[in-house]
Length: 327
Image (cartoon, rainbow, N blue to C red; front, side):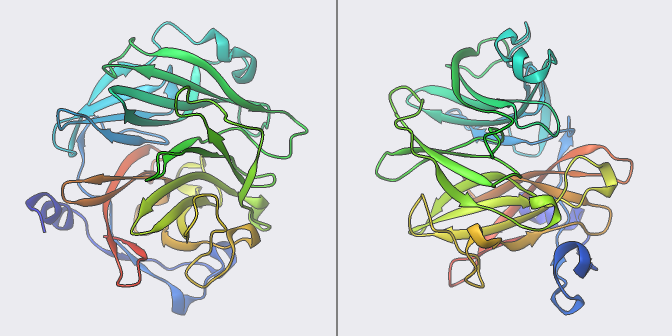
């Protein structure tokens, strides 16, 4: 256990979740005890955060915001505002944002000496959306070059082109998962040399049939011979009334089929809950995961009682059978 992890445990008071069966589909007997977020300081406001470890050993965070919000940290605890990826506007996305400067749910990673960022352009409740790709050699504000549109959805697509996540397999294949609501989460194969679609195949990853068919924010993470599909269930963006929660399933193949711990397919609504509202932590969701020197790290946002979106960071621990627990 690292000294940083001890500080997180001391800073967070563990709370018992009284989970409503009508909201979460659980009984009181299944209610879980979840840890509070680990201690983060400085600039802690974030929505749909993702973090990549830099070659120098620090951390670069990207989040939903005007021009994409950037933050940096040297220790994964104290975060500092680092400006916007696109400080001069993103006219190429205006057709999807209604002219708003706000871009959604960036997914940031580092490959072949360059930071890559997939991000979405949309408006709330609309499936007229698009996912774009940008790159930067430094990751600094204003240095990002837009590489163009990867895919788009329309009002009649039956799926939504938001919440992208790049997964690179051990064999070097690239896949992009994305989507929410409608007919659920999707995946496409990418060309590693361009970061754009390799073919026209559209894979169905997950779908729900309750609570407005609410599933979004996929994040696929490879560990120990399995691909783990982290997802957000239920409703975001309602402040302290948010019912967002984080779930997981896994597969031996990156394209699935994915099953939860009980064996239910994600295409049949499956997903094992690993984090939900508790104490004064509301709607913890939009998960992303990365490997650090002290283990695997879960990154997400949650809401305070005042309705502010905050950065959440916790360690993941793994059972003997290979299932994650938030710690």
